[in-house]
Each structure stands twice: as structure tokens, then as C-alpha cells.
Image (cartoon, rainbow, N blue to C red; front, side, top):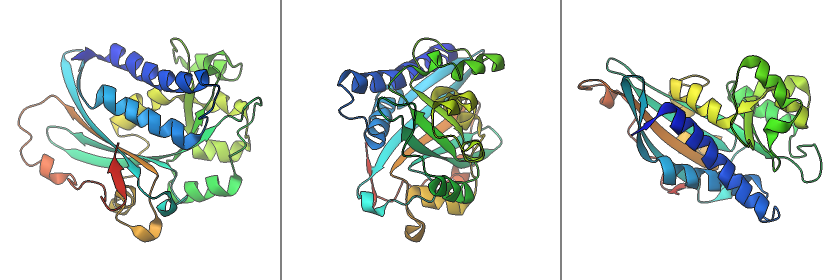
Length: 256
């Protein structure tokens, strides 16, 4: 069991270690898919089954990560990363999915050249809560635009190489460079304080089916992380059975 502050720091450390490893290899694998897959593998290795202590309560996390076996089956309607979160309270169970579209900073520039307006607009139309996920080979916390986050009280310890921002802000700003950081916060912050609390998720069964690969016409995300969040309480009774217990479509996904 680890306390919340330690888990937050360990999660940020895991994200940074993956990207710093790629940077140390002269950016040979500076590619969104490669980075995302390595991040999911590292997350699963460190945090597959853990307990987090928050004050006098305990939260259990159980996680599995998957990738699409055939990239040709991927669609760009919802983003290339999906995160299904199952939260089981003593008297209620909720399940939703978050979508992220990952983009890398182009080497030796301040731009994200892979950001395309039509793609972002398509994703936002299908997933209004979707986020843009930005990877940077330099530490973002030193960026002048990102330092504006200090006004919102977000503390950052050490390096920072992955941030998120709402898709609608990215679209409306029209920015495709590091000025996007003025609207962003750490990926670890988005996961812990938003997704794991049930925020910024889509709860429609149709959308959950798409994330799991059961709607072939709508396509599938390239990567999928499934996390069960269970706060400590007594017997769960029928609560567990209210959640969709299906695994991702094994004709499309393989476990990382």
C-alpha cells in the first residue's frame, strides 16, 4: 500500500522515465504510437494491482492495458487512446470511457505538425469530452506558457513531458505549437483528479462498446487502458454485477 502523494509522484515519474529514455536514444523512436505503447507497458508494470491510502480510506486499483493487433482497423473518430474507468462505490457503480488523441512535438521546432483541424473536429464531434495529449522531448514545466499553470495552483515536481488539454480548447484556440501549454496540465493530474473520479468520461454504452472493439463500423482506438477503482467499503453485493465485465474484443486487441 502507498499513500496518495507517493502514487502521484510515482505515476509522473513513470511517464517521465519512458519519454526521457526515448530522448536519451537521440529521439530514434520519437513517435506517438511508440511513446503511448511504452507508457501503457510501464503503467501496467508498476500499477497493475495496487492499493492507495488517502486519509483513513483505501482505494484499490486494478488495471489492464491492450493494443490493437491490426492498425488498419483503427479509426480516427474518437482518438487513438481510450481509458475505461470502472468506479465501484458501496451503493453505486459507474463506468465511463475517456478518449485522448496523442501528438508529439516536432523535433527542433515549437510546433506539433501532426495536429490537423479536421481530425480534431471529427473527434470532438464524436467524443465531446476528448482530450489532446501532447508529448514533448524537453521539460514542459520550464516553458513560459506552461508556467501560467502556477496561477491555478498545480504543483509540479521535477520534469514534465506529457500534458493534456480539452479538445474544444485546442480547436477554438487554433494553436498548433507549444502555446497550447497555457491551457494544459500534467497527464498524471488528468488521470488522478479527473478520470479516476469519474470526470471527463462518456457513459453511453454505445461508446463503451466502441472502446472495447465491439462496434466494427465505428472503428477502434489503437490503445486501451481499463482501470477498476474501488474505494474501501463493505460487501459490494450486486454492485459488481452492474458493471460490464466483458474483456476487450480479442479479435482486435491483445494484452500488453
